Image (cartoon, rainbow, N blue to C red; front, top):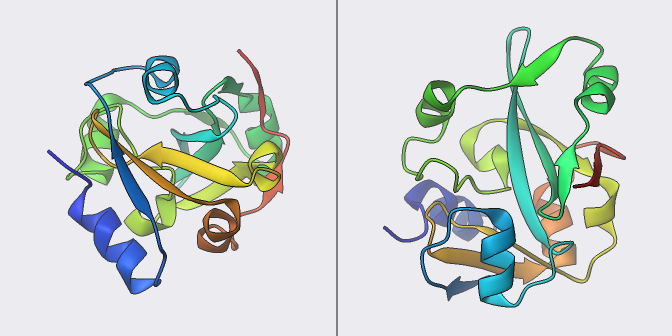
Length: 156
């Protein structure tokens, strides 16, 4: 598998310049960061959360874990981690565990950790366990400009 078609079309429709980097198959964000020589604070990951009436993506640095309490306060309601079955339905052209951080490409709302608003370059999974998308921090923020930014993560 390569970059997901949904993601590719979304980036192209938005006229976003991006690079696709390949790496050996890795399953965790920390393994991907290490194999790709990308600092964990520049590798964005999406944590899909269930909320009343739908889902939301918490977009955080790979070196962090999501603070469910902080996200719950922002959306003013209870949240929990989504199940693998729910994620497979939401991201049908992605490998499980390789969800792109650009949730709006899949029609999902997002909340972005404020740390990602300060980096010059951002990397995120392209929908499989072997490719990373690289774009400027400015372009990443442009793609998620409708998403609130807040402190929703803490170092793992």
